[in-house]
Image (cartoon, rainbow, N blue to C red):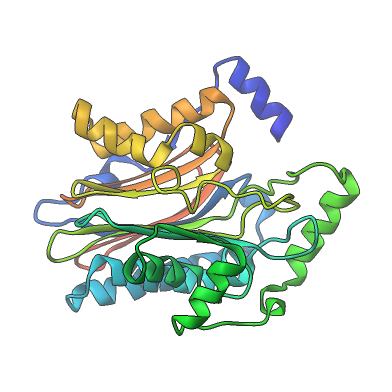
Length: 333
């Protein structure tokens, strides 16, 4: 897939796929209040068994309904984002939490970030190995420290002292992710990517009854990553961003998202140029593609309009309206 993708980039042929206009524009009096993604990449229906597709759809729906229930009860967008991402982190289907991929050394190193659009505060953790739900550690950094990001053993220690659930690193072992590492190692022990090993990050953006936005992102990183590599997911402005107008969460080839400050760029296009949420996400993901990167972006604005844009063959994604109407997608629209 990578050779063909690069060839398409050179020819300027890469496409940006987005949900239909009817899905991004709520009906009068209606609005979307929660949007999620579960990673983007080479996701084809021909490669998916009916049972596995159903498992993905059920987990995405569970995540959406979990956050929606909190929002309907009057909880904050931060609470909804954290609880929604817990569902995705606890599933072995996604490259976050329980389903995290393995590093070159055979470890699981997880990253996460969260941002409160109303206050502008944010928190993140990177390279953690014992925190069951890294998104909760990111929130704890935001609310309990004067810092924005903690990493490695220090972040693990902070989470334990903060009363978060700590697990033995073996908790994150899954046969499928271990096998993926073995396949990549066989291909080339020096490569840091292989067989779509970049993708699987999860994320969420929520809009609460007070009109406040929050965004969060969590990942296990790249299969076979080395030397303590950290991608965009824990970096505010690259993988996650929220202000009073829009919340954004990203998934894809992290190095490109960092270089192009993708999450903040969506907000900047909306704030400085007056673009709508769909126009902004499509413009930014197109720029990532032109630079050689791929992945996806979800965004939700303060009026309840959402966008789910990607330039890959699929992205696990979903959204739910105030009244509980659900939109779920996996493949190209």
